[in-house]
Image 1 (cartoon, helix red, strand yellow):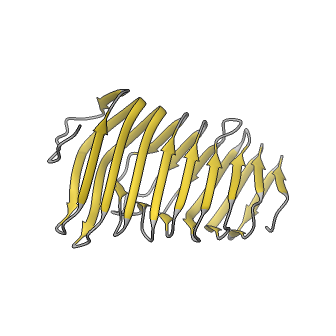
Image 2 (image 1 turned 90 degrees about the vertical axis):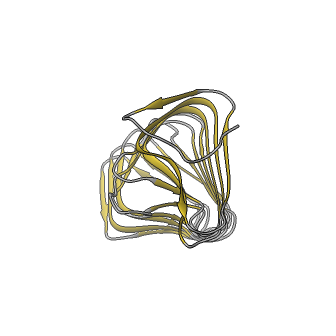
Amino acid sequence: SAGGTLLVNGILNATSFSSSWNPTVTVNGTMTVAGNWLYSIYATTTLGGQGTISIGSMTLQNASTSVNFGSGGTTLSIAGTFAMNSTNTFTQSAGTVNMNSAAADDVRIGSGGTGTYALNGGTYNALNAATTIAYGNTGIFTVAGGTANVAGMKFGTGASTATGTLNLNSGRLNVGAGGITDGSTGANTINVSLAGGTLGSLAAWTSNLNST
């Protein structure tokens, strides 16, 4: 896809999907991508509609790749990896995002630059494994509206040195048994800001981090 608009009102099945230059994708029916959905654009694009999108994985690849998601109440389900490999932003304003992988570090906010996930509305679900903020680089996860339901929030991985930020400004963050933890043996810089909103629990959980 190179520019313009892709409108799906029926059923679209694909083995993979590549967004190379600022396309708008509107799904009012059902779109299934068995493999990877690759965003390789240097711009901001829109993904929305009133339908259902099911994909194998999603990669935000190039610098300045930004995705605005949720217009119309779309449901996006990702079976495997969600990776931000450069300076990327994924802004969710409505709809539902389901990160369904149970593998460690499959949800990577900031793996090749500064990755930002901004939840401004709708629902974010990552209930089978922790969401990794700052996967070897800089990651920011901000809840400014809507509800995030997570198995846990983990900063860094392995021996990596990274910078991670979790902001709860408004909305609700529900945390499962994984808690909010430093997941790296490296010298991470971690910021947890609980400025507003509601911090809840899906199960008993603990944190080894300070918050402000």
